[in-house]
Image 1 (cartoon, rainbow, N blue to C red):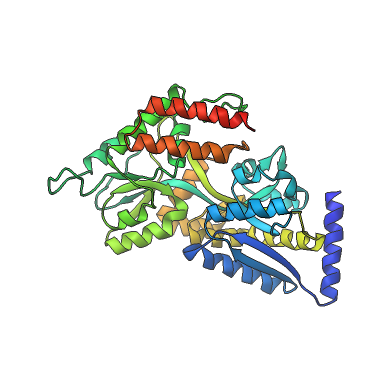
Image 2: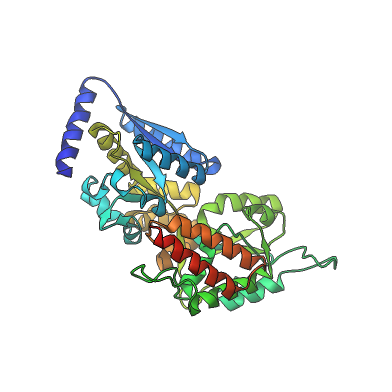
Amino acid sequence: MRRTLLVLGLMGLFAVWALGGKVTITFWHAMSEKHSPPLEYLTQKFMEENPDIQVNLVYQGGYGSLSQKLIAAVAAGTPPTLAQQYENWTTQWLEALVPLEDYLDPEVLADIHPKFVEMNTFDGKMLTVPFNKSIIVLYYRADLVPEPPTTWEEFLDLACKLTVDENGDGVPDRFGTGLRPPNPEIFLTFLAQNEGSILSEDMAEVTINNERALETMEFMARLAKCALVQGGYLSGPFGDGLIAMFVDTSAGYPYNLSAAKRGGFEMKVTKVPCHKNCASMVQGTNLGLFQLNQSEEQIAAAVKYIEFLLRPENTVYWAKETGYLPVTVSGFESEAWKAFCEEHPERKAMSEQFLAGGFGQIHHPAYWDIRNAMITYYEAVLRGEMEPKEALDALAEEIKTIIEEY
C-alpha cells in the first residue's frame, strides 16, 4: 500500500513538473553557526539537481525550542514536512510519521549503518533516518597531555595531576578536566562502559541505582573533585586555559578547535578512556518525515531529498564540514573518507570510537522526563551536594514514578 502511494505521489510530482510548477517542502532544523552553511550548501545543490522541488530550511533555534515547536505543531496537525528529532521526541508522535522503510529505495536503506538502523527503528519499523550524528570522544591539550589516558584510572589520575593552584589561594587556576551537568550522556557513556543501564532490557525494571551504576557515579564524584563543573559548553574555558582535557561530542569539534586556536595551543582528539568496554554514546538527531498535512507529492519530494542527503559523497561532505559522522556504510568505507581520516587523525579517532562502541539512547516514551531527572541528581553529585548512593536511590524512585505515569 505504501509503495502504491509513493508511486501515485511520484506520478503527481511528475504531473506538477509537466505543468511547470514546484513542490515545496519545509525542513525545520536546529543547525546554527558552523553547522548551518554545509546544510544550506547541500540543500542548494539538491535544488539545482531538482529544479522543480523547493526546500525551505527553517531554523527554529536550539533543540529545546525546536522540540517545543514540534510538539505544538504535531498537536495542531500542522507539522513541517521534515524535521530533525531525537529518538525520545519520535516516541511521542510515532503515528504522525511516514514509515521511511516503506518509501526509501532498498539500496539506500541497506546502506545505512546497522548501528543507526537500530537507533531509528521503533516498534519494528524504521521511521526515521540518521542525520547529524556525533560520538563522544576525548579532547586534550597536546602540550599538557603527551600521552592521553586510556582507562578510567588513568583519566582520574591525570585529571588530578593536571589540576593546579598556582597562586595558592585554594582555587585551582587550571583543572585537569571539565564536566557539564546538563550533559548526562557523559555519565551514561561511563555507565555503559561499566555494563550498567537506566532500565532493564525489557524496560520493566529500574536499574539506575544498582551496583554497577553506583560504581559509575562514585567514579564521577571522584573525577568532579579535579574538574571544572559548569553548565555552559566547555569550549570557552578550554580556550581560556582553564581545563586540560575533557569529554565532549565530535559535533563540538569545530568550536573546540576554534577555542584551541584562540588559546594558542594544539588540540588533539582520541577515544574516551575505557573500563570494562569502550562504549560511547551517540549524540545528535535523525530526520523524520511527517504524513500529517502533507500531500503525496510533498512526501515523494521529501523522500528524494532524504535519499540525496544519504548519498555517500554527501554524507561524507557533511561529516567533513561539521564534525558529525558519515551515516552510511559506503560513506565510512569510501576512499574519500578514508583519505580524509588519514590526513586528520582526530576524525579517524571519532570514526573508530563509533565503530568500536557507539550506542544510542533508550526508546522509552518517557526518556525526555527521565533524562531531565538524571540531570538534577547528576549535578547534585558533581557539585558535592549529594552522595552518589543517596542521589541514585532518589533518582530511581523518581524514574519509577515517571514510568508509572506513562
